[in-house]
Image (cartoon, rainbow, N blue to C red; front, side):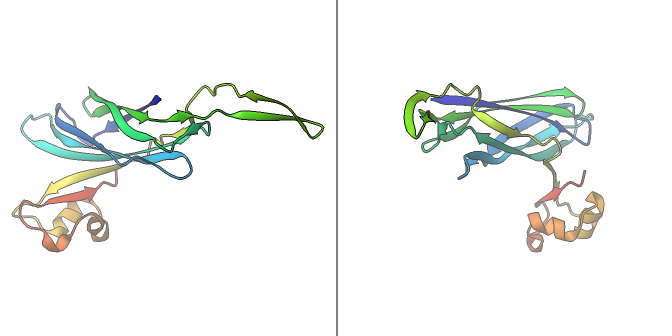
Length: 192
């Protein structure tokens, strides 16, 4: 059996965007032992600003966490992306729509035991639960914005730290600063 779980998120850019040049989707979704599917969608690409001259890269990590109803057997489940689309709805907001496909999910035949004076009186099937999902957590403010800074001739680590208003320790969490050369891409977490 297959089930689709829709996911939608608005990504707000810090600058005006005239067009999206490229965009890609990766994910780290997996089933954990508590029957939760959790992980992140990683949206990356580049866009043109309003001047239509400069292309700016972007990367966003969007957390995803759902709890599957206990009526489903998940031993053979395969988690895939069924559909991914996006729309630039205004000068700085990108709407992301993703359909997560849960393939090879099986519905258990649940039985309820009714007892009467220590005797099993009857067994009956429990009615279908209306949804595959008990709880979906889409915290609006729980995603991380990253900038990708291309190291130029006049750059140094201190100027990058000052420009993006972060600490050296934060920058080191995402980059090996001992091997930075001209043209290197430096991932800069945003404090926005």
